[in-house]
Image 1 (spheres, rainbow, N blue to C red):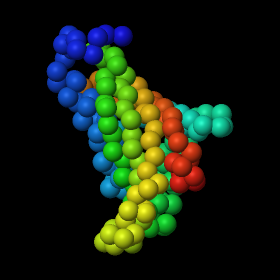
Image 2: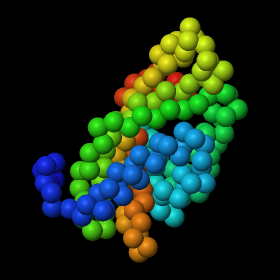
Image 3: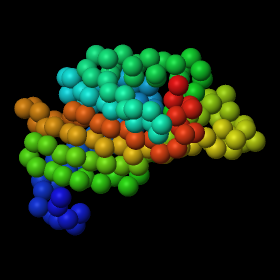
Length: 163
């Protein structure tokens, strides 16, 4: 691994990688799944790690179907997800591949409670955290995309809201 203070990388690619990782949360939270799926390679892999169960791996169309159903269940439940990515660190970067990690603070907010201050505090207490690790590829078109990623939940409270 390169030292985090190393400046031996392409700056335009670095900015694109940072923007890609941030767009992951923005598009999903705004329910812009069409745009969200463009952030991935054609056949992405997602590994979901819960604390007491073996990891779940979904690939390609199974990934797209699972995440579409998950996001639709949020809409039906009147829940607005809010992913706050923090401590984004690019672990590796070469001209065509990169690895990035971030902590994600996740809040599934009840939309009906947005304008009720007395209820909003209660609704945000279920905030949880996860560690995301993205493996990124730069395509022949010069655009960086997520090829695979791993979500490692750090708290059981998140797991309870993810079903």
